[in-house]
Each structure stands twice: as C-alpha cells, then as structure tokens.
Length: 194
Image (cartoon, rainbow, N blue to C red; front, side, top):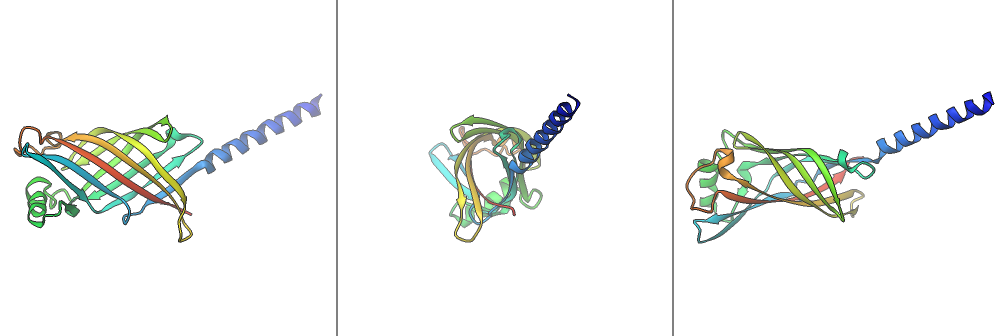
C-alpha cells in the first residue's frame, strides 16, 4: 500500500510538471513586423467628407497563449511623425499643429486584458497614450491567419478596430462638429521569436 501511495504521488507530481511545462511552452512570443504593420485612421473632414490616413511606423511585440488565451498581450509603439494622408502639406500641418510630434514623438498601446470571444474574435482592453495623455480603450480584435512564411519564419496576424475622441487626448482644435471622433484600425503582423 505504501508503494502504491508513493507511485500515485510520483505520478501526480509528474503530471503536474508535464502540464506546467506544456502551459509554459504554449505561449508564443512575436515581434511585430514594421514592414507589414501599420495604423490607419478615419475622421470627418469639416463635416463634408471623410479623411483617411495612416501611421507608417509601428513596432512592438505580442504573445499568444492558445492554452490560456487570457494571458495573451501586446505592447506597440507608433511613430507619430510617420502620419501619412497622401498630401505632404496636410501631413506637415498635422505633425506640427495637432500631433505636436516634437513633444510627443510616440503613441503607445499596452494591453491590460484579453477576452477571447471565440471564432477568431477577441476584445483587447488596454491603455493608449497619445499626445501625452493615457486613456483606457477597448479594441475589437480579429484573427487573420498564421503559418510558415517563405523565409523560414512563422507569422501570425490580426486586425483591430476602436474609436477614440481627439478631445480626450488634449487635441481640441476645431475641425467641424463630427471631427472629434476618430476611427482607428490596427494591422498587425508578427514573426514568432525563436
């Protein structure tokens, strides 16, 4: 009976160690590929039409844990001086008068909670720092795909959408009655770290 108890204890310890190891191995870390990742935005143009643009420099990292999705997280940084609306004069104006890129060269998002919704969808809560102000935001996240790339790496991609108010981040310049609301879309492609 004593040997049986010892065997059972060893078996239980072995299983616990195996599960712990498996769980630790399940988390995958990714470096965001800045050549295939960016942030787009859309805002009302004086109430007459919609203006679209993007930030071309997005860097950071994220992790995904298939065994424990709630443990997944992301930290991303955008260079605000890479704003691009396909009109150089307007881009210069945005950098100097609205984004104040000399004082605030970066915008950052750091996740605080990942909620798996199933079917490739999730809600990502986190803190967005923009124009020197940090506010909580909620991002609707959608899985795009994952797999081997032609260069021997493994990639995973997502899109995310949210809407913020310029005034919440200290940008109160008058741009028309509907221009306080800014729709953001995140295009994220990461390369798994080896």
